[in-house]
Amino acid sequence: MKPGPDTVRAGFTIVELILAVAVLAILVSIVVPSVSWDTMGKVQAETAGRQFGNYLKLARSLAITNAGTNSNGYKIVLSGDFTSYSIINDNTSETVKGPIDIPEGVTCSGDSEFHFTTLGQLDSGSTSTLQFSKAGDTTTATVTPIGRITIE
Image (cartoon, rainbow, N blue to C red):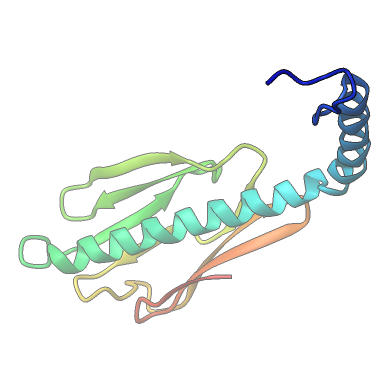
């Protein structure tokens, strides 16, 4: 059966669709500036810190699992200008992983070497830290003498 001339069709007109899109565009233009680039800086610093923490855990794990064949352990060494780091087999001086670049715009400061013994402890015997900063936000990777790794 065909609809007659008196039948109302359900749907949206082109004018209604244009108005809906215009309202959404206005709402987006209000919300987007509130997500500032400073927030992105915090995310980048935190991500860099967490990634470094994962590589610390890898170096510690390698030192423990290869203790039978590597009596010197593994270490993470940062480049002189703190823009990258590498995991190094301290027995052979071979680079196991790296260099891993620190994201552009994220600055680092702190200890430049984290050496894990075959028991998973820090060779230095004292707490070591590395700070990742961007846009006023800082994330700190800390390793205690017994090898406990925290990212804050």
